[in-house]
Length: 422
Image (cartoon, rainbow, N blue to C red):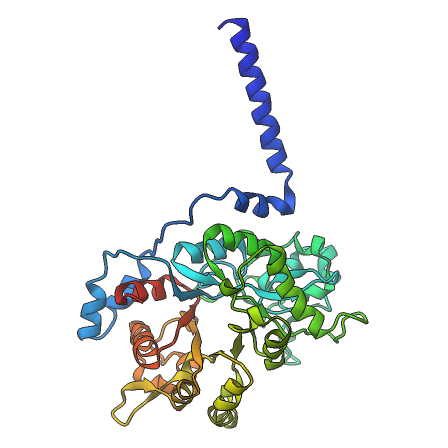
């Protein structure tokens, strides 16, 4: 090789090496940098589970129609909402879980929002769940900062193993040291390892080596690069507010919206959520562009009295400016006198008030042979196989008329929506 060519090749190699080193040192900014030059959103890939569920259905016209769609085409749809990403098999609220949800065709993905000790917003389902969703207890210097240290089970006293580790116990820099794991704990544990290694048998640890935790701002950049919309949920603080003197609920609610404004996100792409109606009313008043499609997550239905009050109060909600309500799916379905699944009184009242509906959470119950537990409680007598998830989904879509369904495995909802042209 001529000397000039060798020098040129060496120079090019050094430039490439420098670029690689700079990329490797990018640290917490790597997601923002990647999103700025991201390729097209990922293609939709559903895997075998949706087809398995359809095959498991009872014979009938719905099964035949869904089987006819087995070869696709499948496409991204806003009817399919990634609940904490794709947390049936990926650690919730991690980059890997979010990317899996987008691959499965979720058109909207959720970041549950809470804050660290230094008031930085991060994606976690609850402020105080780090002991079950991360490896914090395995890092002694961080475990020492937990609100309540790990305490082993005491069989003689009848007390379970416990710990309490909050995002507000640690700084953002410390939070970024953690790995996401499958949400679980062992109440009979005698050691930290036993406490942490408790993933339910219908989930898996195959994709949980070290889930990448994200700030809320990083989730915005990632979702933008994946071509999905945003549904952040402002989580209830589990510390006294105002936090450390002056960080109150309004500042917290505003900070979440401010991060979308700073990223230049179209408000029409954001479905801010809260179980606290005051948060929704705050956004309607102070941030109407975001508030007009804010989602009131309705857990009043967990008691008979609350359910009745919710049904009777739909017009009042609408009068306050709320446009979208989202109860758990059992609140939207019931059984008629023939044992068929039909829309509930709640669903009918919401529609009469002109409210849109979203519901949660499909694919969170494990095997359905036993009636489906919490999410199917209103129709448990009609639930006896995994394929019945598709039957409930069909009622929610075609009779109740929900605009979207949260799922721990978005591929299931994407399959249905693609088949039905939603």
